[in-house]
Length: 91
Image (cartoon, rainbow, N blue to C red):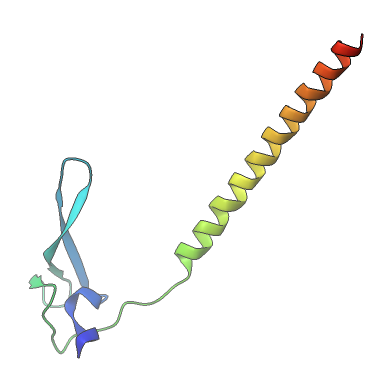
C-alpha cells in the first residue's frame, strides 16, 4: 500500500515552488485522471505505477562518453605542446 501513493503514480504531476537557487517539490500536484489537485501521500483506485526506464542511465553514459572524448582531445593538445617545447629546447 505504501507504494500506491499518488507521488508514485504516472498520472500525478507534482507542483514545484521557486526557491532562491532552485525549485522545491511540494506535497501537492495535479492528477491527470481525476482532473483535480491531489496530495502526494494519498492513494486512490486510479493508481498506475510510473514506468521504469533506463533513460537516465543512458543519458549519463552518453555524457560520460562525451567527457572522455573531450579529455582525449585535451590530452592530445597537451602532448603536442610538450613535444613542440622539447623540440625547441633541443635546438
